[in-house]
Image (cartoon, rainbow, N blue to C red; front, side, top):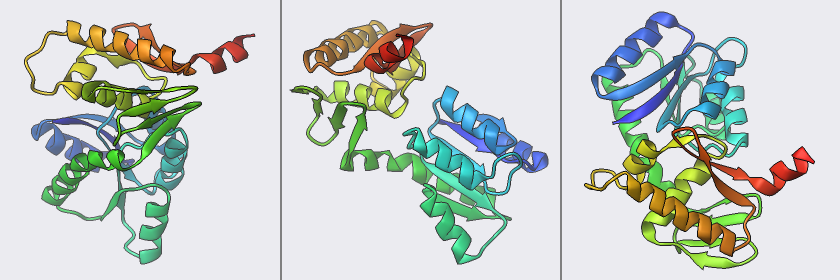
Amino acid sequence: MGRILLAEDEKDLSRAVTAILTHNGYEVTAVYDGEAAVEASRSGIYDVMVLDIMMPKKDGLSALKEIRDTGNMTPALFLTAKSEVDDRITGLDAGADDYLTKPFAMKELLARIRSLTRRTDRYNQKNISIGDTILDIGTQLITSQNSISLAKKETVMMEFFMLNPDKVITKTELLNHVWKDEDVEEDIVLLYVSYLRQKLKSIASSLEVQDAEEGYRLVEWKQNSEQDS
């Protein structure tokens, strides 16, 4: 059903939430402090992040702000023992999509997570940009020094790459995200990656889809070249 990053320092609660989410078909990565949440967000791809506000090393507000500053727009739900309006506003201003006050019913948490996973269409209402490259989801147009139109599935794949820059995305993850339940062979991923590479090159983009172990990674090659020189 989806992958969840759970950052909760109360280990009994974390174990209980993990067990319920796993029972309901989710794959859960559990961490216990804000720094670990930031690191996990950099290395993994998740459908929803569930973050406690009060955590050691780095609180949830600071952790989410740092995550958002990298361009990661994965839907985020805050867990908090505080119910004051100011805390809710602060959480939403930090980039949260929703919040849930402790104690909470597990059924409500599941409902909130389902709601957040349905909100991925919000990306269709704005552009995504990295470096000199802009992807317009609505028009399926990608622009850098030049512009070119993408096919629907090329757009979905490029969006996935741009929402997860510098992360290794496996062929299976691409297959599941772009083609979902369609009965297609894994080789189709290689074909569409080659399409994207050609189109990125045709618009003189600084972005490049590189081969990585078990998959691919989107990087800014010009920036990397400058750093290496």
